[in-house]
Image (tube, rainbow, N blue to C red):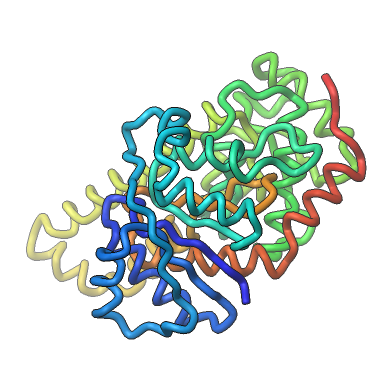
Length: 337
């Protein structure tokens, strides 16, 4: 059994959505053993209305909740009986293989590093969401964990992202690119200029050079490498643009009788097309390079997204991703700048 802790108190729709998502994931994957962690009374109330396998879903009590606006370091220190802290300690102590939460991003990122701890040789664990493109998905790494990265960090991000995309997403020799303001090697800020030759000379990855932001949605790279400030801006702009376009398309289709009739005709094709760009289809963002797996889902995540994130953990575990990262990072040593 693959043991996964799910934060029942994390996210805008907790505890109902995390509980239903856990039941769904357990029903769909017979090898998952889930621990729902949080306020026991609330979890039990939600479980009563679901058809769940009680032999594979266990409740772990945690009476405190870390709210989104709380200072992460202080919250981790003070709220020892919170669902996030107790869940992360379960991973640290080997009582679980993974932790999934739609709760406070800051607390999860801080707790992942402080409680679960980094793999030997990993300098900075990056957050690595999958983003939809016209040709499938790309891994955007880092998108929120390290806003002041060094060139050596970005090289490790590229290695970890390559392992993730090859062994979890099944892409052989994934194409790695660094986010830049142009395709030429001499362009970019100091971080990009110093990192580019290191990636170019790295034998462990398929480095294809720079990628401009406009090329990311077209899937011109499988692993998109950047520091977290740039990555987070790309991710949020990506999400916002998608929502704005969808809103305008709906408005246009409903603007007249003729457009409404046209909408009926194109609805099946449009639905299939838009599904490719639905981020909820791809689960959560793993924090790579830790001694256990920690996955962050969107705060507004629905049942489907959290369920996929839970099953994503099982696949991650089956493919021994941490062992592969450990071997890759420590097999060649850390690059010092």
